[in-house]
Length: 324
Image (cartoon, rainbow, N blue to C red; front, side):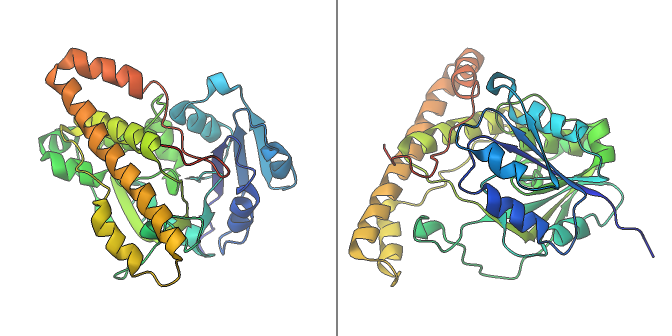
């Protein structure tokens, strides 16, 4: 009988008291037991640390906020853990069911698979935007992406290279042996997109396993949508030579969808339509800002990168005002 591999979980957090217990409870309720949970806190002030300390299997590491970035903090978690596989998530995510880890682990179908990525879904909760509620249209299908070499990756068309970068560190699992060879780059944003490129160019494969799902939701408004749109445009131009299309549907089309949701009151429909209108404006303005900088050439894009990738887009936390 093959011995089950050791699974370490690494969770970077800051001010996640609202969801931290549900995240840890969901991990500990999995059909595959984890060996350890390493929580790296970068200056929480809401009691997150006290919640983590209640869990014997969780180990809390505290770092100064100035030392935190998406790449280095995850590398610290790898160095502080010991599992054969390292599972990453965040403090405000929770598994959809008790087979999340099992499905992630099953995605390592070949020896060259460096990492498996699941998907984020939005729970049918009235506090979440109903336009984003998870409504599966078909059975989830596992996909594997590989190019075999840096030369083959670089020669592929931009869309294929972009589509192959399937890892999302809200729900991802890596081989430790891979992370020893190809560590995370220092990055304040998009560390998972960067390590996808590095893995594929090094000849490894990546798997997307959409059956491995976590509930995760951030309320978006004009500011956060604009910041995220610009940041993603910059990264995709730098890595693939592409830019994303607008990812928020036109608010008038979404108004029809809201009218068809019987569980919502008129007040709720109006609230979410206004929110969608602001997000749509954020996407349109974000793309315009990017295109204006791109028209100025390398100097314009460098200045834009400094402004928008110098710090990650900050999501709206529970209790914050949804301001434009």
